Length: 162
Image (cartoon, rainbow, N blue to C red; front, side, top):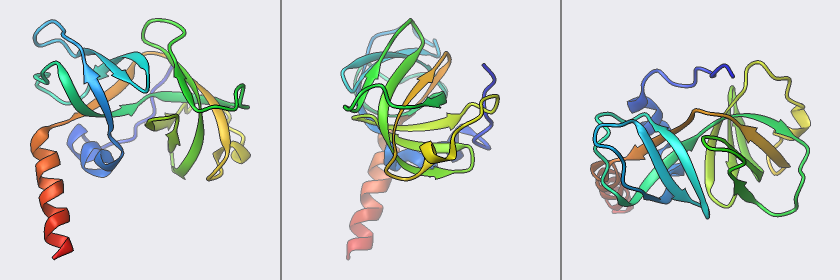
C-alpha cells in the first residue's frame, strides 16, 4: 500500500494533531526499535513510532494513531478497532472531520487517518457524522506525544483561561 504524504515532519504532525492523541498503554520493546505495541481502545496495535529517538517508556502514554486507510460501508453499528492480522487494523467509526488527505475518525478512540491515495473514496462516506468501516495495512504510524508537549499544552490552556 502506498502511503499518503500528510506531514512536513513528525514534529509538525504532532503539533497539528496532538489534541487528538489517545490514552494508550505502551508495551515493552527492544531498546531503540521503532516498532511499538500499544493498547488503545481495547486493541493491541503494532505501530511504527515516528517520534525519534524511540525512548518512550512502557506504561501510560498519549499516542496519535495514524494509519493509511481504505473506507467502506459500515459492517457494524458500534465504534470499534480490530486487528485482523499483525500490523493491521480495521474498525468502524464516525467521521469527525475531513481535510485533504486526512480524515479524523472516532472509533472509540480518535484516529487521524490518511486516505489511501490509490483508492477511490465515496465522498458520502467522508461527510462529518457519517458512520463508516475502514481497513489499514502496515505500517500504522504512531506518534507518542512527549510529556513535555502535554505540559506545554496544559500550561497554555491555563494561561489562555486567565
